[in-house]
Amino acid sequence: MEIDILTIFPGMFYGPLSESILGRAQEKGILTVRIHDIRDFSTSKHRVVDDYPFGGGPGMVMKAEPIAAATEHALAARRAAGGAPSRVVMTTPAGATFSQEMAKEFASCDHLVIICGHYEGVDERVSSLVTDRVSVGDYVLTGGELPAMVMVDATARLLPGALGDEESASSDSFWNGILDYPHYTRPRIWRGLEVPEVLLSGDHERIRIWRRKQALKRTLKWRPDLLDQVELTGEDVELLKQVMEDS
Ligand code: ADE
Image (cartoon, rainbow, N blue to C red; front, side, top):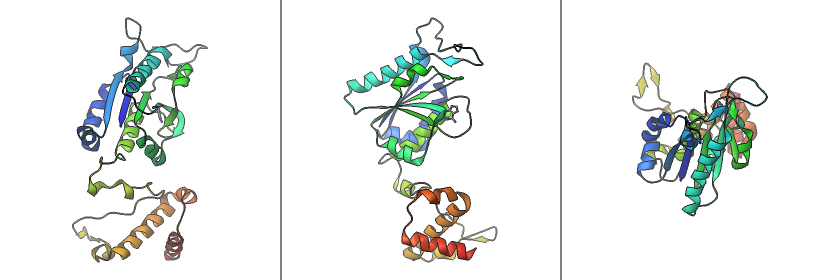
């Protein structure tokens, strides 16, 4: 998968992208990330990328032309390579909230362009180039760089081969629409707290059922809204009944 990130702060990306799973995915050739400085596409001598808003009001607005030129540059390079249609994602607190579902959808694309918004916003006229407007939550950050990193991270780890066997994504929280079950490792007793006996039993079926019940229990406690959206199996319904009886 190829990702082009358009930003006015390219330096923010180098650390996060070169470490851990993202770094490894790039080394393995599963992921290619290119960072473009939007200022390189400014037509002004001083590499200006923002201006005052028409109609007045506080703050500055990112100019349309440098963003459009940078986007078209990324799209043209990709088209020349003969790839499938690209998604052009704009980070904005006014976008659809990023989710595991969205990460899965992005991971199935060959090419993403991510435009990191800034200041009070981006000139509305670049909308025609944008396919998705995405927020990482209902709060306002100083810019779209951290949201872009969140999206790249959540997306890239789903690419086939990005995670090692021991880091499977299939048991992640949200993968199946509910929260993950609790995890334990050595020592067996830590500060007087014991690992649940079932996990030491070697009985895979008992462990599977216990984990599913714990996952449902936590979801009911911390994110009951998720249970309205997920398709529960007959076993899930039975386990949830037990959870409610236990409490
Ligand atoms: N830019 C500023 N805040 C943001 C948010 N919450 N999500 C995406 N982009 C943003």
